[in-house]
Structure formats: structure tokens, C-alpha cells
Amino acid sequence: MKKDSLLGYALLGLLHQKPRSGYDLRKILAGTPMGTFSDSPGAIYPALQRLEHQEFVRGQILESSSLRRRRVFRPTVSGKRAFKAWQTKPISSADVIHGMDELMLRFSFMDETVGSAAAREFLRALVRELRSYIPVVRQFLKTNSRAMPLSGRLALESGLHSYEAVFRWAGTALRKYKRKK
Amino acid sequence: MKKDSLLGYALLGLLHQKPRSGYDLRKILAGTPMGTFSDSPGAIYPALQRLEHQEFVRGQILESSSLRRRRVFRPTVSGKRAFKAWQTKPISSADVIHGMDELMLRFSFMDETVGSAAAREFLRALVRELRSYIPVVRQFLKTNSRAMPLSGRLALESGLHSYEAVFRWAGTALRKYKRKK
DNA sequence: CTAGACATGTAACGCGTTACATGATTAT
DNA sequence: ATAATCATGTAACGCGTTACATGTCTAG
Image 1 (cartoon, rainbow over the protein chains, first blue to last red):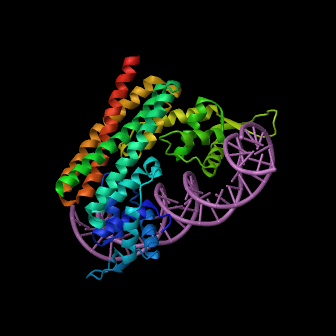
Image 2 (cartoon, helix red, strand yellow):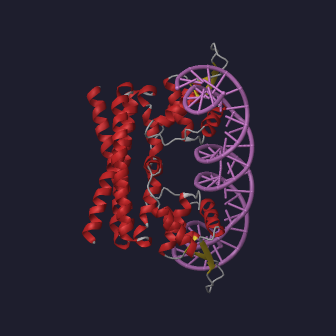
Image 3 (cartoon, rainbow over the protein chains, first blue to last red):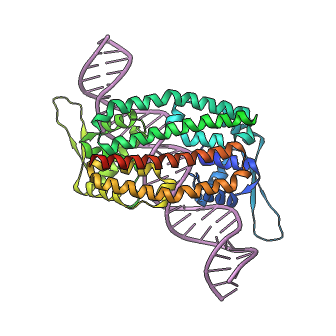
């Protein structure tokens, strides 16, 4: 449960929705926008083996009329526990600075696994971290932009705009949860 | 010149600004927001060795009054050529879908290396690609959102908002170039 | 004198990429 | 027939991560 790959968590999350084969998972990763994940067999089959070895998933060969073998995987009890623990662990400033992908992945499956109360708590924590980090970036830009060429300055600004977009998104997401409740 | 790491290009770009040592580069990567790059010695010294081996940079030991050795690197002629080629190669849809980081890195140093005309051309191409890709994501959301739980839908929407933010940014960036010209 | 910054490296390990390999089933 | 899709894997390779190793110089 130490240092697992994001791909592993993405697969584990998808397997929480329903049992799937490696091939099913590949198709989903290939066909979904936002798929910042690899859909190559050389990535996903080894990842499934690792999950199986950690006993986070269990594979089962489906006996069908055909000879074509097909292994579907489903999360084990300890796999579900590990997944929830990963999703609900506290958000650090490092997560916001270098791991926005991971944060979004953690959030993606929250309704199905830890419930909307945990999802709201996650969004509140994200808003908190962004509220403290965005001014840091703004300050950096203000003090250094004079020394930078236009393209460099603009590239940094684009990063700032991304953080601001996530900040706004998290706020509206929170309001949507409140409306639903 | 085939499949180089982003870190290598980031270092090469920084060395275009002025000769620097591995330690200098580390400090910059550690202290700059947007630094999605590693600042660990185990990443940057091997990366510099690779660049040296490809003859994209040359290291020179600075003789100072002290015994403390310090190697500063500067790009070679072929290093400069390779960097420009990488920056100005056409933007593909795959770049927009899976490689926004790389695109921003390519843009970051453009003023200093290929000039503002190339920077404007880059932004125009980026706008074009986004204009064709954003509707694809929107369509995906529209057709699949009904089947998704709220958190999953919101996560996808956050990706869409990111693309839209970059789109707006590229537009305003273009206008800033035009105003300056 | 000693903690911390300066400065450069190496080694084990994990994982994604690319390419290859194999075979079954369906559609043309 | 044969191409495309279904389906599962393996192997070489490159690179980043973490941790370790070594030594110098400066400030308190």
C-alpha cells in the first residue's frame, strides 16, 4: 500500500463499478477523454498482475461456450479497503502542486465508493489548498515576470489559469452536491 | 532526436538562456511553480549526461580559486538545432490530448530561441487543435453523463474546463503578441 | 566547530513504452 | 479466404524515484 502507480488505482476504481477483463479496461482507457492513462497491453496486464499479487483484485476465468479465454477481475475486501484509504487520505500541498491528476482520479469514483459526504469533504479540502497556493503562484509571477521573456511569462500564466479554473470548478461542484442533498 | 524525455528538453531550454551547472538547474526546477519536473540529482545528472552523450550540450569545468568543482553546461550547435526542431514541429491532436505539458514547455522558451513569429504560429495551431477537440469532449460528456455518478461526471467536466481555459489563454496570448508587434 | 548550503554523482528499483507473439472468433 | 477484432500476454529498454555516498565552503 506504499507507492502504487496511478494506473493501478484507475483500474481498481473501474473494477469497483463492475467486474471487467483486461481488454475491457483497455477499451475504456482508450476511449475516454481525460484518459491520461496508458491503454497498452504492456501496461495494463502487468498492472493487473501487481494488483492480484497484492491481493487487491481477484481474477476469474469465465467459462463460456467458446474456447476463447477471458479473465474478469473484481476487487477483494482488502482491495476495497485500500482504495477507500487512498481516496480519503488528506490532501497535501504537494498533491496540489505536482499531483492534480491523482487528485482528480481520487475524486472520480467517490460517489460509488465513499459516498457524497466524503466527496464534499474532499472538495472543501481542495478549495482550501488552492486558496493558499494560488497566491504563491501569483506572487511568483509578480516578482519574476519582469525578468522573463513574453513566452515564458505566458506559460507560467497558463499554469496559474489552470489552478484558478480548478478552484472555480471545485466551488461549483460543491454547490451541485449541496443542491442535490 | 527520437524519443527524448521532457526533462532533457527543459534542461536544454534553460541552458539556452545562460550556461548553468547541474546544481543551478536543480534549484530552478525546485523553486519555480509549474515545475512539473524532477529536481532530484538522480534525475538531472543522468539527464545531463545523456544530453552530453548526444552532443546537445557540452560541459566545462570552471576553474575558480576554490577546490570545489563546478561544471557548467551550454548547448552545442546541434543541440540548438534539435531544440528548435522540437519546438517548431507541428502540433498533433495527440499532443493536445495527452501532451499539454510538453506543448507548454515547447512554448516557454520560444521568444528566446525561435522568435515571436514562430510563437504566434504555435499559438494559432494550438487554438486550431483545441477548437476541434473541445467539441469532442463536450459531446462525450453529453452522451455519457446520464450513465455516470455525479463525481465521475464532475471529474470529466473539470478536464473540459481545463481545455477551455487553455483555449482562452491562447487567444489572449495571441492578442498580446499582436499588440506588442 | 558544527550545521547547513554548495556541488556532483551512483545504484537499486518500479513502471510505462514499444514491439513482438500467439491464438480464437466474426465479418466480408 | 482473409482481414479485423477479440483477448492475453512477454521482453527489452528508458527514465524517474529514492536513497546513498562523498567532499567543500560559509555562517553562527
